[in-house]
Length: 220
Length: 220
Image (tube, rainbow over the protein chains, first blue to last red):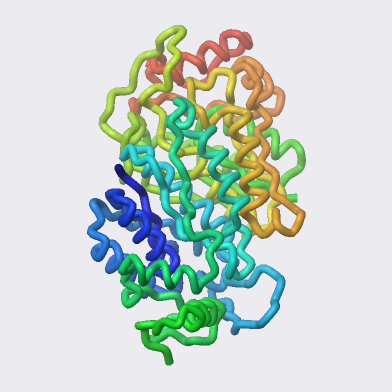
C-alpha cells in the first residue's frame, strides 16, 4: 500500500505524513524546491522523510520564481500577523498547491500509489484559496477525469486528513503519533531561529499553546 | 489583453495560439522541457513563438523522466498506429496536461492574463484522458477554487478552442489564420524527418489529406 506524501518541512505536512505512516502506507515523499527564499524548509523535509523511513524520496525542482508575485519567492516583505485580516496575504504563491498536487499525481500514477496525502489546512489557512476543502474536492474530480487511473475506474485518492482540524488538534494528533516536530520549520522568514512574528509562526505558537504542549523548536 | 499559450511544437497548439493571436491577445508563450526524448519539439515551439511575436516566452524545466512510465520520456517503444485501438497508449505521460496547465495557471496569475489557451483535442485524441472536454471543464472548476483570481471573482479562463474539431478542420483553420505549419513537429520519434508511422504522424497526415492541403514538413 503506497502513498505519495507531500512534505514541505512544516508541521502540517509532517503530521499528515505521520498519519499515512501510522495507517500502514509505504511513504513515497515528495518535496519541492520552488525557489523559496527559506531553504531551511527543504532540510527539514529531508529529515522528516528519513524519520518516517520513506521508501523513496524526491526533491522536485519547480522554479516558481520565474513567475514571481509572492513574498515567499520574491523580495516582497513578509508581513507580521494581523488579527482579523480578511484578504489573501502576499505570501500566497500563484497556483502553488495545484502545481505540487499535479506533480504528486504524476508520481502516484507512475509508481501505482493509491493515495496522495497533502497537509492542507483550511481552519487557520491564512486566506489561501488552495487550502480549502472545496478546492481539494474539485482537484479530485479533475484528477479522476485527467488520469489513466481515473479513466480505468481506479482513481488515485487525494487525502487531506487535517484539512478541518484547528491547529491545536494537529499538534495533539502529531504528539499522539510521535511526529517529529523537532524537525519541522514553519517560519516564513529565513533566520537562524524562527521569528515568532509572521502569520505562520503565530498560528503555530497559538496551536501549541492551546494544545498545552511545548513547541520543541527555537524562537528568536 | 494577455493570454498564456501552451506551445508544444505540434500543430494543434500552433493553431490554438494562432487563434489567440488572431483574436487580438498579447501572447505569453510557455513550453515544457519535460525530458521528452524528442528535442525537436522544443526548437519548433521556439520558432512558433517567434513567428507569433510573443511578448514573453518561457521554457519551463519540468523533468517528468524522474517519474517515468511513458514511451515519450523513457526507453519504451513508440508503437505504430493501429486502427480502432481502444486503450490508452504507452505514449500517455502521467498527469502531463495537468502539470502543464498548473504552471500555465501560476504564470497567468502572476502576469494578470485573463486566458490560458491549450491545444487539447478530443476527436483524434489517441485515447488520452487529459484531452477531453470534461477534463478541461473540471480543471476550470478546480482553478476557480484554487486561485486568488478565482477567489476574488475574476477567474482565469481555460480556452481549448480546437477540442472538438476533427484534425482536418484544425488544418483548415490553421491555413485560414496563416499558422506556421512549416515550423511544427508532431512525430513521436526523434528522426531527422518525421516517421509517418506513429499515431501522431498518421493522425496529422490524415488531417492534411482530408483537408486537401499539402503538409509542408518532410517525411521519411
